[in-house]
Length: 215
Image 1 (cartoon, rainbow, N blue to C red):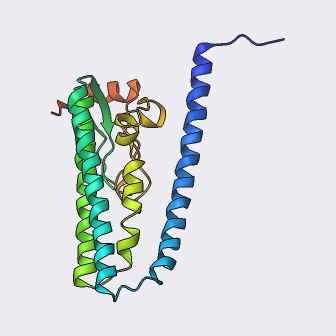
Image 2 (tube, rainbow, N blue to C red; image 1 turned 120 degrees about the vertical axis):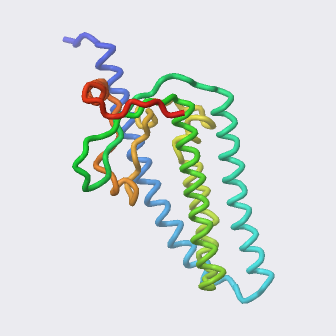
Protein backbone atom coordinates (compact mmCIF):
# COMPACT_ATOMS: atom_id res chain seq x y z
CA UNK A 1 0.00 0.00 0.00
CA UNK A 2 1.42 3.36 -1.05
CA UNK A 3 1.91 5.93 1.69
CA UNK A 4 0.30 9.38 1.19
CA UNK A 5 2.74 11.98 -0.06
CA UNK A 6 3.32 15.01 2.16
CA UNK A 7 4.67 18.18 0.45
CA UNK A 8 6.41 19.15 3.68
CA UNK A 9 8.14 15.78 3.93
CA UNK A 10 8.99 15.88 0.24
CA UNK A 11 10.53 19.35 0.57
CA UNK A 12 12.47 18.32 3.68
CA UNK A 13 13.78 15.24 1.89
CA UNK A 14 14.85 17.37 -1.07
CA UNK A 15 16.71 19.78 1.21
CA UNK A 16 18.42 16.88 2.98
CA UNK A 17 19.52 15.39 -0.34
CA UNK A 18 20.74 18.81 -1.53
CA UNK A 19 22.68 19.29 1.71
CA UNK A 20 24.25 15.84 1.37
CA UNK A 21 25.27 16.53 -2.24
CA UNK A 22 26.74 19.91 -1.26
CA UNK A 23 28.75 18.35 1.57
CA UNK A 24 30.03 15.70 -0.83
CA UNK A 25 31.14 18.43 -3.24
CA UNK A 26 32.87 20.25 -0.38
CA UNK A 27 34.79 17.10 0.54
CA UNK A 28 35.68 16.57 -3.11
CA UNK A 29 36.75 20.22 -3.32
CA UNK A 30 39.12 19.76 -0.39
CA UNK A 31 40.61 16.69 -2.02
CA UNK A 32 40.93 18.59 -5.30
CA UNK A 33 42.78 21.41 -3.53
CA UNK A 34 45.20 18.88 -2.06
CA UNK A 35 45.74 17.23 -5.45
CA UNK A 36 46.32 20.62 -7.10
CA UNK A 37 48.75 21.66 -4.38
CA UNK A 38 50.77 18.44 -4.59
CA UNK A 39 50.70 18.50 -8.38
CA UNK A 40 51.86 22.12 -8.62
CA UNK A 41 54.63 21.44 -6.11
CA UNK A 42 55.96 18.76 -8.45
CA UNK A 43 55.55 21.01 -11.50
CA UNK A 44 57.30 23.92 -9.79
CA UNK A 45 60.39 21.76 -9.22
CA UNK A 46 60.79 21.53 -12.99
CA UNK A 47 60.37 25.24 -13.71
CA UNK A 48 63.61 27.22 -14.13
CA UNK A 49 62.80 30.14 -11.83
CA UNK A 50 66.41 31.28 -12.20
CA UNK A 51 65.50 32.44 -15.70
CA UNK A 52 64.25 36.07 -15.33
CA UNK A 53 61.83 35.66 -18.25
CA UNK A 54 60.24 32.58 -16.68
CA UNK A 55 60.03 34.24 -13.27
CA UNK A 56 58.41 37.36 -14.70
CA UNK A 57 55.90 35.20 -16.60
CA UNK A 58 54.91 33.38 -13.40
CA UNK A 59 54.61 36.73 -11.62
CA UNK A 60 52.36 37.99 -14.41
CA UNK A 61 50.15 34.90 -14.11
CA UNK A 62 49.86 35.45 -10.36
CA UNK A 63 48.96 39.12 -10.77
CA UNK A 64 46.51 38.25 -13.54
CA UNK A 65 44.71 35.73 -11.32
CA UNK A 66 44.27 38.36 -8.61
CA UNK A 67 42.97 40.90 -11.13
CA UNK A 68 40.46 38.27 -12.25
CA UNK A 69 39.29 37.77 -8.67
CA UNK A 70 38.94 41.54 -8.13
CA UNK A 71 36.85 41.87 -11.31
CA UNK A 72 34.70 38.95 -10.17
CA UNK A 73 34.07 40.57 -6.77
CA UNK A 74 33.34 43.96 -8.35
CA UNK A 75 30.75 42.33 -10.61
CA UNK A 76 29.15 40.63 -7.60
CA UNK A 77 29.04 44.02 -5.86
CA UNK A 78 27.23 45.51 -8.85
CA UNK A 79 24.73 42.63 -8.79
CA UNK A 80 24.09 43.14 -5.07
CA UNK A 81 23.42 46.85 -5.65
CA UNK A 82 21.27 46.09 -8.69
CA UNK A 83 19.04 43.62 -6.83
CA UNK A 84 18.85 45.90 -3.79
CA UNK A 85 17.21 43.20 -1.69
CA UNK A 86 16.04 44.99 1.46
CA UNK A 87 14.42 41.91 2.97
CA UNK A 88 15.05 41.87 6.72
CA UNK A 89 17.46 39.22 7.94
CA UNK A 90 17.70 38.31 11.62
CA UNK A 91 20.17 35.88 13.12
CA UNK A 92 22.01 35.21 16.35
CA UNK A 93 25.74 35.67 16.00
CA UNK A 94 27.77 33.13 18.02
CA UNK A 95 30.03 34.54 20.78
CA UNK A 96 33.84 34.31 20.49
CA UNK A 97 35.46 31.09 21.63
CA UNK A 98 35.94 31.07 25.41
CA UNK A 99 33.37 33.81 26.00
CA UNK A 100 30.70 33.26 28.65
CA UNK A 101 28.31 35.69 26.94
CA UNK A 102 25.35 34.55 24.88
CA UNK A 103 25.07 35.10 21.14
CA UNK A 104 24.24 38.59 19.87
CA UNK A 105 21.12 39.25 17.80
CA UNK A 106 21.87 40.92 14.47
CA UNK A 107 19.13 42.58 12.42
CA UNK A 108 20.16 43.57 8.91
CA UNK A 109 19.04 43.25 5.28
CA UNK A 110 20.00 40.77 2.57
CA UNK A 111 21.79 43.55 0.68
CA UNK A 112 23.78 44.70 3.72
CA UNK A 113 24.63 41.11 4.68
CA UNK A 114 25.91 40.28 1.20
CA UNK A 115 27.98 43.48 1.16
CA UNK A 116 29.56 42.48 4.49
CA UNK A 117 30.35 39.03 3.10
CA UNK A 118 31.86 40.60 -0.02
CA UNK A 119 34.05 42.89 2.08
CA UNK A 120 35.24 39.81 3.99
CA UNK A 121 36.19 38.17 0.68
CA UNK A 122 38.13 41.27 -0.35
CA UNK A 123 39.94 41.33 3.00
CA UNK A 124 40.85 37.67 2.61
CA UNK A 125 42.26 38.30 -0.85
CA UNK A 126 44.29 41.32 0.30
CA UNK A 127 45.68 39.31 3.21
CA UNK A 128 46.68 36.52 0.83
CA UNK A 129 48.45 39.01 -1.45
CA UNK A 130 50.28 40.55 1.51
CA UNK A 131 51.47 37.15 2.75
CA UNK A 132 52.53 36.10 -0.76
CA UNK A 133 54.32 39.41 -1.26
CA UNK A 134 56.26 38.91 1.97
CA UNK A 135 57.19 35.33 1.10
CA UNK A 136 58.25 36.19 -2.46
CA UNK A 137 59.84 39.61 -2.16
CA UNK A 138 61.37 39.35 1.31
CA UNK A 139 61.94 35.63 1.82
CA UNK A 140 62.64 34.98 -1.92
CA UNK A 141 60.22 32.03 -2.25
CA UNK A 142 59.07 31.52 -5.85
CA UNK A 143 57.31 28.13 -5.86
CA UNK A 144 54.14 29.32 -4.03
CA UNK A 145 53.43 31.77 -6.87
CA UNK A 146 52.12 28.91 -9.00
CA UNK A 147 49.86 27.43 -6.35
CA UNK A 148 48.54 30.86 -5.35
CA UNK A 149 47.71 31.57 -8.99
CA UNK A 150 45.21 28.69 -9.01
CA UNK A 151 43.75 27.94 -5.55
CA UNK A 152 42.45 31.48 -4.77
CA UNK A 153 40.65 31.60 -8.14
CA UNK A 154 39.12 28.19 -7.47
CA UNK A 155 38.04 29.28 -3.97
CA UNK A 156 36.52 32.50 -5.32
CA UNK A 157 34.50 30.61 -7.94
CA UNK A 158 33.22 28.26 -5.22
CA UNK A 159 32.17 31.01 -2.79
CA UNK A 160 28.53 31.36 -1.72
CA UNK A 161 28.13 34.82 -3.23
CA UNK A 162 29.34 33.57 -6.63
CA UNK A 163 26.91 30.65 -6.47
CA UNK A 164 23.99 33.00 -5.73
CA UNK A 165 24.76 36.11 -7.80
CA UNK A 166 26.57 34.58 -10.79
CA UNK A 167 25.49 30.94 -11.04
CA UNK A 168 21.94 31.90 -10.07
CA UNK A 169 21.53 29.19 -7.43
CA UNK A 170 18.66 29.73 -4.93
CA UNK A 171 19.65 31.02 -1.49
CA UNK A 172 18.33 27.93 0.30
CA UNK A 173 19.79 24.88 1.98
CA UNK A 174 23.53 25.38 2.47
CA UNK A 175 23.27 28.74 0.66
CA UNK A 176 20.67 30.08 3.09
CA UNK A 177 21.75 33.28 4.84
CA UNK A 178 23.46 33.57 7.26
CA UNK A 179 26.04 31.36 5.59
CA UNK A 180 27.59 28.52 7.53
CA UNK A 181 31.15 29.24 8.57
CA UNK A 182 33.51 26.97 6.68
CA UNK A 183 35.77 24.76 8.77
CA UNK A 184 39.01 26.58 9.48
CA UNK A 185 40.71 29.15 11.69
CA UNK A 186 37.84 31.66 11.69
CA UNK A 187 35.21 29.06 12.60
CA UNK A 188 37.44 27.84 15.43
CA UNK A 189 37.35 31.35 16.91
CA UNK A 190 33.58 31.14 17.41
CA UNK A 191 31.32 28.87 19.43
CA UNK A 192 29.29 27.23 16.70
CA UNK A 193 27.36 28.65 13.75
CA UNK A 194 25.04 31.64 13.42
CA UNK A 195 21.41 30.73 14.16
CA UNK A 196 18.50 32.10 12.18
CA UNK A 197 15.73 29.79 13.35
CA UNK A 198 12.63 31.43 14.85
CA UNK A 199 13.18 30.02 18.33
CA UNK A 200 16.75 31.33 18.66
CA UNK A 201 15.85 34.78 17.26
CA UNK A 202 12.82 35.18 19.54
CA UNK A 203 14.87 34.12 22.57
CA UNK A 204 17.52 36.73 21.74
CA UNK A 205 14.87 39.43 21.23
CA UNK A 206 13.24 38.67 24.59
CA UNK A 207 16.55 38.81 26.42
CA UNK A 208 17.44 42.11 24.70
CA UNK A 209 20.68 40.84 23.15
CA UNK A 210 21.44 43.20 20.28
CA UNK A 211 18.75 43.94 17.73
CA UNK A 212 20.26 47.08 16.22
CA UNK A 213 19.93 47.17 12.47
CA UNK A 214 23.18 46.99 10.50
CA UNK A 215 23.39 49.18 7.40
